[in-house]
Length: 247
Picture (cartoon, one colour):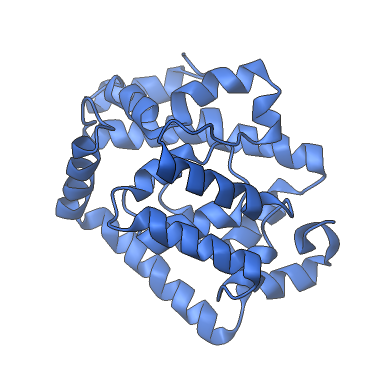
């Protein structure tokens, strides 16, 4: 069995991911809200305080460290690991990003997820096979009822009643992913030490496993962020000169 992402024509996938004109308008409004969130310092502070209260932050990164850390996470972890995965599956990385933007543009502008709404995080989790979903589940705990909402929406995806089932179906890469995600969400709600289902290319490669130990969970990622340069010139020097994962 394969998902429509691997069987449908490119034109069909584009239409499926975009949805109706009304859905596109709603996505545009969501993107506008996501961009406005960058100017909402108090909301970010509240999110960080919540994560600190949950025990996920030993030291809260500064704004600059969050920016630099997000860039590092993208260039050392999210993008190269995903590109390898798509190449192995015969999926065009560039076209896949187009589908993701059409399905949910708001989820593409916030790598850390700190500025994202609960629904944006849930949609992102259901949209793509995650290298390690633990980070996103921990992030959802900063939203009241976030894990419960995730479980309910994954069940909707599985029974075909989710309002975004068609557009997400145009993007998600593996037919059994939502079943695996539901099992993990339920296990995680029982114990936070539940083993996360790593994506295949992460689980089999020691190089990715090493980087996953840094960025795969929210506490480890934020510990890395908090050690980064906290002055503009030093931060710029880091981004210009550090070309490989330093861990």
